[in-house]
Length: 126
Image 1 (cartoon, rainbow, N blue to C red):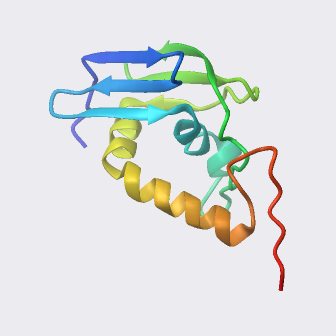
Image 2: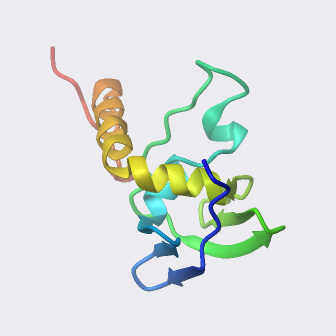
């Protein structure tokens, strides 16, 4: 990755979408997508195989965005998650792989009998 740095970062509070404009690409992320793909240890774990599947995050909102040096932003969410530092490189990679990552996430939720909606419980019948 070529140390991508966005020329513009825009957060749409009403729709809870973050838009990043890079020289060659523009990406738009939902708060939910960013929350479940947070690079924090709480989500990624401390090593391969230690990932924690996030669920019930459909209505999560970004409450604060803070620059972290010149290489990243730190996002705070209304579920009190605030330890993810999203580097520009990581966000660019998420943008390129967004559709496949989202489909994989939905499959993992389904396989685990979990859902996106925090108010819904999925009951598996034999």
